[in-house]
Image (cartoon, rainbow over the protein chains, first blue to last red):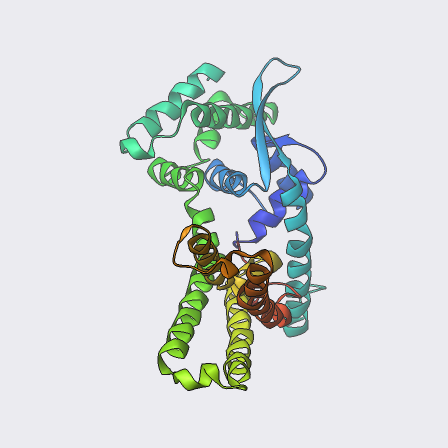
Amino acid sequence: MKRGSAELAILSVLADEALHGYEIARRIETQTSGVLRFTLASLYPMLYRLEARGWIAGKWETRTNGRRRRCYRLTQTGRKKLVPLRAEWRVFFHALDRLAGVADA
Amino acid sequence: MSETDWHRFVRERLGGQPRASVPSEEVIAELAEHLEDVYQDARRRGLSHEAAMASTKEQTSDWRLLAERIRRARAREDVVSHTAKTIWVPGISVLFFASLLLLAMTRLMPPTAWASPHGPWLVAVPWLCAYLVFGALGAWWSYRAGGSMSERFFSGVFPAALHLAIFVTGAAAAMIGRPWSSEYRQLAFLATVFLRWVMIPGAALALGTLPFLRGRSGKAVPAAS
């Protein structure tokens, strides 16, 4: 997955609600119809990197089924980062579309 | 495999890494929970135990690389790298150029230039013009490295820190040093020096950053910042 797109994907799904790692991966895979997929190897280094930057915050929570999960939520800093990130990608894709006509591909 | 077994599975694979790369128990627990979810999901989809296990183990094939990536991410190495690229390298570089300029001015300007009626203008105008350029340079440098608006601004005005440090040192010396005239200890004098030595150069640097404060970062392709 292209760098930068992974951050956008993770920040976007966390914009709606706090999720743990597996839920993040499943939500992204579902909402992109399988185009974007995160494995353990690609997801957690990215989550820890985003957490180190202060864009997301992780906390252990006990779910209704009794299992403990580390849930991540978007921080205020992360919300501020998401806006220009979305705008950058919008411009990028429009530029690609003008170049290669991929909008209806 | 039970949830507990996934903990052992992860610990066995990560435990063989160099000590510095072995993640904490918290990370091991989180990875194990993820694998448990993958396994359970595979079973819900109708896969046999063996197929679900194989599918789950495909989540990563290189545990050494995963351990190293986690170590770097949690050690904030990438964060430091980003901050260095967007703030410290541009800011300190511009500070260096500003220091060279100040040194050149004090060494190369003839003493009579400072004392003549037009001396201050002969010195101040090119000096402040140079600071406009330095401010722009710092902001542009941070902009190209993907810095945010505040990071670009800070990089551009960073040399003002040198001026502030010199002012604070001089003011402290005036307060405690006996040979200094009492005039130098007066608030009005210090305020004037602060204005001319810190605020005005700082304003010139800040003005120089303005063209690079708007818009997104200068990277042509959106990338991890």
